[in-house]
Length: 71
View 1 (tube, rainbow, N blue to C red):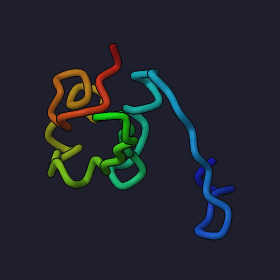
View 2: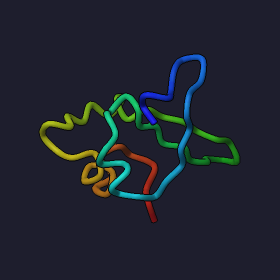
View 3: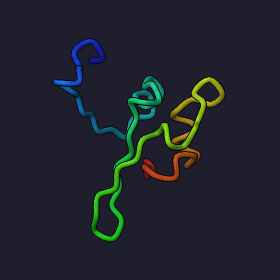
């Protein structure tokens, strides 16, 4: 998918899969939620989670991104 994606032709994938989240790079991961009837989007990079220190799926399941909870 990375090879097929570009700025002109982005690929959006929604998932609750830990294995997919684990395989992403931090700038590729966004969280979408709804607050007060409005859609909120935040990037994983804003949480300053270091993928070398903690896998993205573990950070996600531990709520280190403060959003996008899988349950």
